[in-house]
Length: 218
View 1: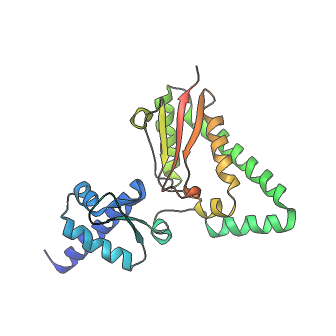
View 2: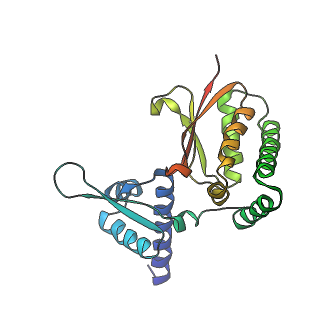
């Protein structure tokens, strides 16, 4: 293997680590090694490099007796490595709107924007069973950079389905204007009128992902 091949493999492994942390949040090195099928020593070397680059961070947690455990997760800079279509311009625009027209006008603009998106989603989802529509919804969210997936909620002790978004494409907007997260929940309810939608996880509250339980109405 040439030096360039080795460097390419290293970059690929580091990206795999970042993507795994994006999906799973805080994890231990041994879990990473097992999931990515590489040695614990190699994982720790990559984690050291990524932390020095400011892309990940760790916390120490004591679990019973013995040595403390190190849990690794993405830093804000690490999350910013993943696609984001909006960011600075959207935040700047909304800041300007709030300064000139007031907070209530911002709320109204955002509400109408999410209603417009909901109508577009419903047209694109079409008819079909709930699993079919959720699969289409996941694809739409992926196109916009949300890194979404849906699984049976029974894996987490609930009926229905769990829609998870490991990456928020409008994270900066949501941080400055948290009201958009409420709009997002309302959008899902409008897109799936035959379902009850409940948020279970929220990045803005320190979770590593946003999650929604989706259950068909009786």
